[in-house]
Length: 222
Image (cartoon, rainbow, N blue to C red):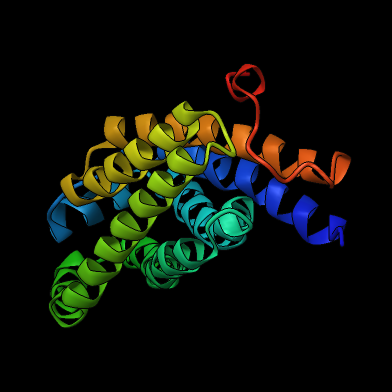
């Protein structure tokens, strides 16, 4: 039975999630590994950081249905691994949504007249939640790379899509951890290319709903 609405919704999320993330990565005026450095950047460029904060949050929200779309692609061929790998990635994504939402709090902190108390407050918050976000990031990486392996083995999409998915998520988490804007931009460019092609494969399932077997080498390379 075909489910066009969820598939179209998930396919749209596969494109919009990395696209909004790319907008956010381009908009952010700078990233820092220290709280004071980040608040100084926000204070100097509040409008641009606001665009970044909203974009990252929207992107994180959209990655949840996007990953359901990836799970749908491999579920018929490898249901167990689709649920295990996709479920682990989804757990990490839920944590990532919370982390992304905090960027709006930092944006408000950066508008304070005296940044000293804001730095102290942020440091206390990071000390209490750092382990949770670290575990969430690990879950995202392990789950996404595992899902990429399943995509590679089942060949429901071209193999460069599976590789691009794994590379982009590792680069993305590394970019956030190292406060590297170029790494973030690169990660979303690769992610957009890979997930857009996955979205096309998901849409094709409604156009050709009876075709559930492996794709031919000629089509798989498109």
